[in-house]
Image (cartoon, rainbow over all chains, first blue to last red; front, top):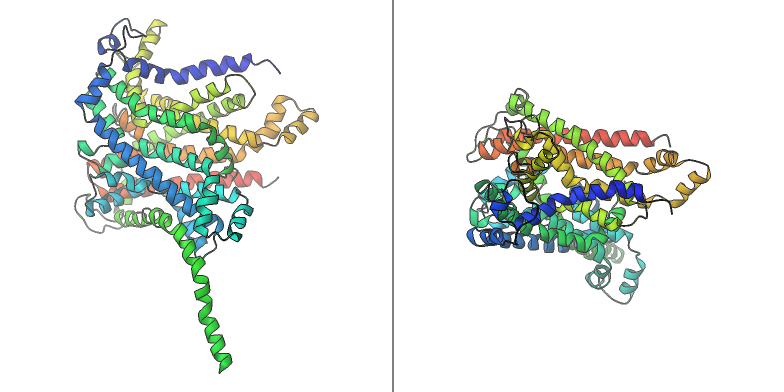
Amino acid sequence: MRRQWPYHLVLMPLSLLFAAPLVWMLITSFMPDAEINAYPPRLWPSHIDFGGYLKVLTEDSYPRWFGNTLLVTAVAVVSHLVLCSLAGYGFARLRFRGRGVAFVAIMATVMVPTQVLMIPTFLVFKNLGLIDTLSAAFVPWLATAFGVFLMRQFFLSLPRELEEAARIDGCNRLGVFFRVVLPLARPALATLAVFTFLGAWNDLIWPLIAINSEETYTLQVGLTTFAGARHTQWSALMAGNVLATFPLIAAFVVAQRHFIATMSFSGLKG
Amino acid sequence: MAADALTLRRRHARPRVRLMPQLTGWGFVGPATLVIVGLSIFPAVWALILSLRDDNLLAPGSFVGLQNYRDLLDDPDLRAATLHTLLYSVLYVPGSLVIGLPIALALNRPIRFRAFYRTCLFVPYVVSAAATGILANFILDPQFGIVNDLLAGAGVARQGFLQDPSQALLTLVVVSLWGSVGLPIVVYLAALQDIPRELLEAARVDGAGAVRVFRAVTLPQLRPATVFLVIWQTIDALQLFDLVYTTTKGQPLDSTTVIVFYLYQQAFQLFHAGYGAAVAYALFVVTLIVSGAALWHARRGEAPS
């Protein structure tokens, strides 16, 4: 084994530099505002102060926004897992008329940027009376081309023999799918769930456009608006940030071992 | 007669027998196809029609042909926004690859604390643009921000960062890199792990040094990952909106107004739906050209081998 210290000499400071803003966010969320604004600056609170959290959780609609986002994200994840794994399996294994056309049509949508879709989608939702409702926030997240592609690639990488054995034993397609294929797809489903969770939880531009009233805000829209209104109450802002961010970090840490494996089969090799 | 009846029956029977796989197939793919294609092709066509009209977001207008497209060519604000977007992309895209690749190479070695490093470098990627923006405003605040306190401690003058027109765009690039360099790292790591070990060993046995192995074997093997990342990061850069919205809102002195932010202002604050759609389509075409050029370049590069 060659010497490791040159690597550590670069990676250690860099990693700490990357983590520092988040650590500082966590520390200041427990600091009273007077200490955050003190000069010379303090790097550690004199005592653990929950003032920021208390303010966020009681004085604002924050818990409501949190609930809204939780609902939107849950619908997005469940719908993604169901629709994308069904479609991914269909495209990977079943033969039927129009399969090629449907797959190309789905993949073509990747090219169309959100910005092109925003204005007409807003108009459609307005005409349906869905603007300013939570369903407006989750409709674009029901299924994505990325999800279908990811699941299709995964199912293509599975050996067919298991499914054929189950078919010979008299299991129908849906039975094979639920009893044989899905249990094997756990790593891909975990990756898809985390990516969808991330996307739906962090989405900003679409809920910003589709939702106007404070009680229907999602967390990201609420955070941004709230930051504008309270721009010196840093402990409350940081507490809000911590609560909005840590569920994601937790999800990532739990699922991170699946990421790299999934990326290498999902076809980055062109 | 009997033969006729038989062929007739067979002709009718054939679709009936094959109906089941059709239904099963569409049962599996139908719902997702309907949602994805319906929410994208239909609005995309509508946006194209809108871009040829002078509709207000709240009330329909009339057909104006290519007027919106002509207008956008002489719009000085859009030109400024395009310039900001280009400057941002030119710094952000190569920056993320140049930082990401060496880190991935280092993380691909069997060193201690690898999981710790990887987690630290990737975690900012999951933080939302809203939280990142609030955090950036806090840390980089000219008066109270910790970065200026640290700079003052080191004897460096306090900086304006996001509130200084000459620094704001550059600061946004740095904040974006912090939040997104995790992606190139992970993609390159995955690609590095796919390089066949025999290939590297063969090069070493042939007497190639570390630098030579990297240039002759590793880099060409990483090419598909690089092409993917260039396209992905360029699209990301051209579509920059969230971070601008949550930090500068295009200020100070419009120095950070980028194309999508301008589009948002036009369509959803000034309600110019037709003009906004035209700007969106122009951006779409530019994105297609850039991605196409990157793919074409990649193909051409592969051809000799």
